[in-house]
Length: 303
Length: 319
Image (cartoon, rainbow over all chains, first blue to last red; front, top):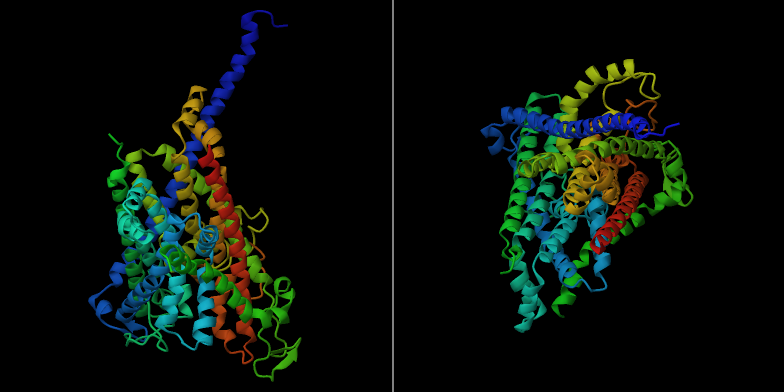
């Protein structure tokens, strides 16, 4: 029977030494596996970028940038033009409703529609893009008879862009301090002037980030365009309907499975262009956002 | 009309778009829904029927003789590839988020995070290209034979490893595509946890990792669950990458983890051309039914995730 202090503490101390070892081990395994997880992701990113950049750069040539596609060779000028037209068209179509929804959610939060719009926008972000593409095919291409066209492709991309523009606009407007609005209202400005004249300019970098993000997503999309925009080897002649149009992501998907090295070159070059554009836009928008947050005058402590 | 009404009216396009989409897909798919009934989800026989025969009428719908539309193999392929992806993505995502939030100096953190999270910005079709060109040869020649040989005693890991196009390849590539969603959200949540809890844990003698594991991580579990469900939704609907690396099996249930599959999203792309050869149009409507089912699943999954995340926001805002 343990009576002295040493005897009472002895087994305890041994147990504690064991548990200390176990704790050290737990720490080591914990940090080790989380570092491994991060290394895995970084390694995969390097691998993807390596493949895209190495093969893309060796495939890229002036011909590809200045000629249209001919069979399984030629260039990608038609696809570059098409991607620009479709993505800009989609973002332009989505800008006004997206901004309006963002303004409504941020400024008139008490409105009865706000929770519904917010929820539906968040769910719309998660709807697979192929579903949006098939919806476009069924309604625009078939029912309205637009055929594969710029209008159908841009509308599909607009639906995809809407929730991004809406939610980033809302977030950006929420960063604008209440005092700014109150002073504007106190000076007698109406809703429209307060939002458009005061809040929107103050939140512009954040809103711009959302629009850039939507643009990057539109440039990288394939599935919603396959059955709305189609594919064309020629430059766009300006018709909104009844004329299919090419785009870069289609070239990646369609040409890599062809057995010709000229087709592979087009696919790699297209992959390089798309990835480069998307990465630049993503980094740019992140830089804008962080610079804005750091500089924003209303985050300085009041004197 | 005042400005507030105007923004409400124009802004509601965002919500209306989703409702209109579900409604139109439903209307377009209705004849197929009537014809297929529940067999659509439980049978494994996607068959356009005899394309050269005269259409017949069954249950009020004009179809080709012997036409059947059962998508059990698509549901299996979608759920299995997503299950593999999410079960790999959660541990990797949590590990990376812990290391980014707690193990990386703040100076480096934003750059390393950006680099890893750009994985989410890379277009799906580029993942498909990467998978098709380098990952499939690598996995099918080096990794899968090794796995089948040494891990073959585990059910579904043994047997014929096939060409590399298939379930596990899809699962692995999908993992990379959805991990950044989990990592980014969780890292933000961990970084924004207040200093007081950390200090309390350290004062009780916890090491840094113990603080993260036993104090901070339980605090953000709702964020973890929410972002994992969002990531699940993304994996369920991924199209182009899966299309290029899944093998696009039709009417085939995978017998092991290497077997070719097809998912609902990729099937819509791969089958529309052949569906258009059906003169009755029923095949195109059946594909619309696939799209509708996929849409409803993703609405369900995303709705659930959003409800959880809203709840967490309100919860943490109230504390």
